[in-house]
Length: 46
Image (tube, rainbow, N blue to C red; front, top):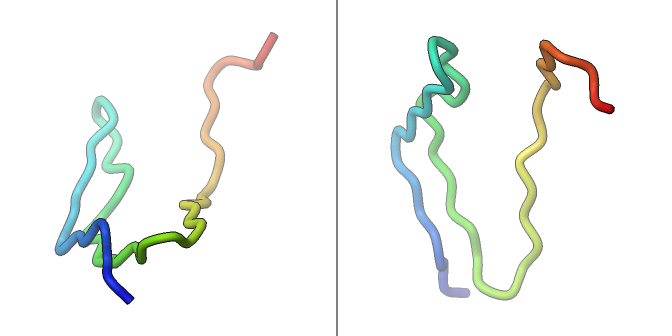
């Protein structure tokens, strides 16, 4: 199966927070993929 997205050592910063650290991932074509992590909300949802 072919991959439509490949990441190698992906790092993502959200302001001063290092949200994603050294992510290696392959996302295959025609498959459902989700990233799930802890919820860090400073303000409650209305």
